Image 1 (cartoon, rainbow, N blue to C red):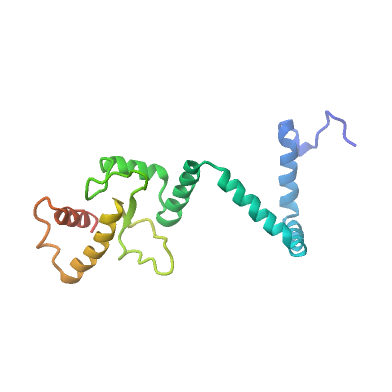
Image 2 (cartoon, rainbow, N blue to C red; image 1 turned 180 degrees about the horizontal axis):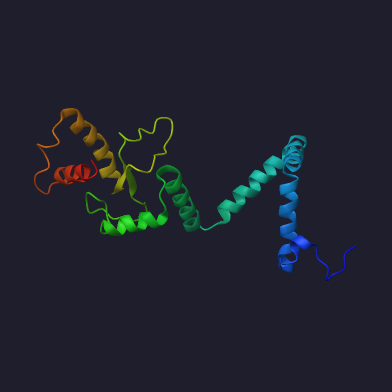
Length: 180
């Protein structure tokens, strides 16, 4: 038995309150495969454990304020789908004047959509992109119309003939040509 002032050498510089956690991490790292096998077997032997864990996780998630859940979802979605951070979203929104890149719609209760070039990442069987083809932030209406509009224009080869004036169509063409 060790005396109180004689800690294990590998934990001598670890604060007292962190020693248990440090020891547990080291034990788990050393016995990882065994612990995973034991946990897997326990879950097989006790099916009620899985349901209880699901309920605990659900309760933990739904006990969080809606704004916090929304923030967590935004962070995950931006990183998984577009390889972007919430800071990028805020900077892009600010650079667009706080509104949609094509119209004056400002985000109220719903955030703006991240627009990307579908020719680069067709998103077949996934919603994730490479992150290199991201263009800007658009409202639902502009994002939907632009998706159809872009394909029609590319199919018709009329890029250079349109885009005159300050109409929505002109702004959309300038927006698309900027990222072409």
